[in-house]
Image (cartoon, rainbow, N blue to C red; front, side):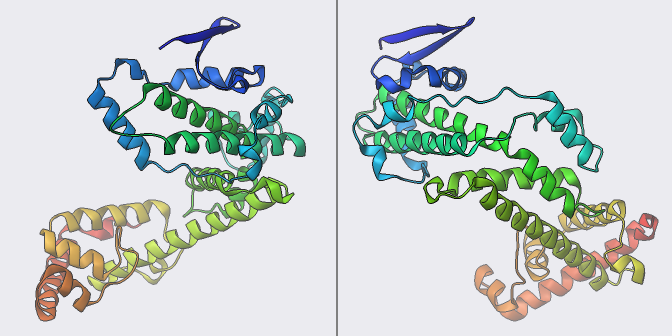
Amino acid sequence: MTQATSTVSDKKMTIPARVAAWMRSAELEAANLAADAAARDYNLMSRDDLRRATKMQLRQEIGLISNSAFADAGSGNQIFSVSLGLAPRQKELGMRTATRSGVDLPIHLGRLCEAPLLTSEQEVMLFQRMNFLLHHAAVHRRLLNPNRPSRVRLMLIDRLVSLANWHRDRIVEANLRLVFSIVKKFVNANNPFDELLSDGIVALMRAVEKFDYDRGFRFSTYATQVVRRNSYRTVVMNQQERQKVVGGLQDMNLDLSDEDRGSSISEGRWHELRSRLASMLEDLDRREKLIIRARFSLGSHRKVHTLQSLADRLGISKERVRQIERRAMDKLRSMAGEVQLAELEV
């Protein structure tokens, strides 16, 4: 396949020859270089590999906020004709965020916040470009045919998605300080900052994908609600999980003091208790583990399952499920007495 190559500084930017003119615009140079770094070489693939790659591409969903103007002729040239004018990263912004966070942050986390805030015009342009690129990726994706795989089209879809992700990342990094400011309010002994921050960044990325820039609101207003709601949900779920594990230990007749049963249980003790319980569960057989986890809503089970629902799932009687549960509980009580959980008190 013929390729056109242009040089930016000391790096080479390689763009498929048969693309729209706007994809070669100077405004996309940095994004195209990032796309080059992540590009797959479809030229090295056999026809069978191309078929598999095509089927995999068809199984993936391209989510975007559509706009009727994206299909207009010349819309790409118009959208990419105006410069974004993004300001360079500023080290002092990251240092200031780390100082104000109120927690002892690693240096690399402070570096996440070095991107300046976006103006309202820059914000609209980034969202418009991101969704425009995804729109065209979706258009080409609909034209894929596993029986007649096209290297050119697969490369083009990958590039369009990579270019869209580059614009998404600019939005995310400009709003990371907002995530820091929100999640630090939820930090306590049982909800560490790094866990809340990780969840908050994921929530921010989902907010970017779902935000409709055409409604005239600033993204920060929408993102604040999404990240705050997500942080609250994380704290509640952590508390519920702690209560389930402590409750399960109590059901095994373990001697936990009133102080330990409350939310004041230390983080170290909590992790040890959860680790010991997980270890004991591994000593049960497959059916016993399934029934105990389902009955006490442990692990991936988000609700307590009834004896009848487990009987239907396992193809046995309700009374048999009850017998297996009782046998498993007896085993756990025996193991709990052996591991001397009193040693875990802190």
